[in-house]
Length: 213
Image (cartoon, rainbow, N blue to C red; front, side, top):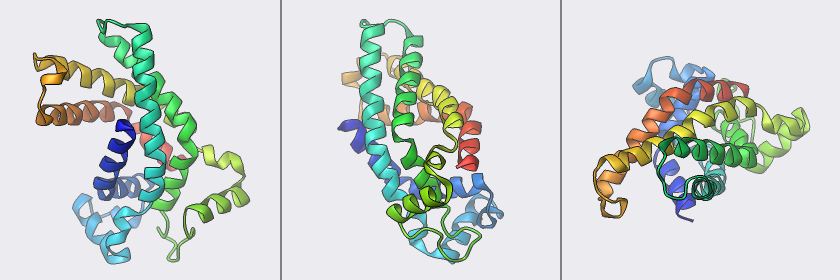
């Protein structure tokens, strides 16, 4: 529950950044002016709501994704290294948990990317909503289209999920106090640094995934 709620909340708050990132990855005219100009271009074309395109399906995906990932990580971690002595185990457990969550929820990720890039370079919307996008993709491209980019996603989630959990637990230890005594700010800083570290190494795979989707 904690992992699911955290994923939905963080995704909704950062949705505008994710929209700009995805449009830049797939290559659209809205993002040709650079990072800051992209916001102005998108707003001028579609208005404020454009920055939350695909957020509904993203939240539908992230709740089970994060719930599965955190639960699987804790279960795998406790079986491999109950005493929490070896940092590499965090990477192995995190990567495995990430792969499991990615495979189970992947069609929702595919729909999120399609809905986020809806309208792009086309004028009128290609999809009218989540259910219409699902039916249109299946009708025009077949069920396997829902798994386009899965290989790149699995390759990318290994350094991302594994690196995130490993770096986060390392940073928690580096504070020099038990995790239960850490402040909100310390947890927040640790989470930001851990994800930034992991994202740096896995980002090329994320770009490939968006292109394939």
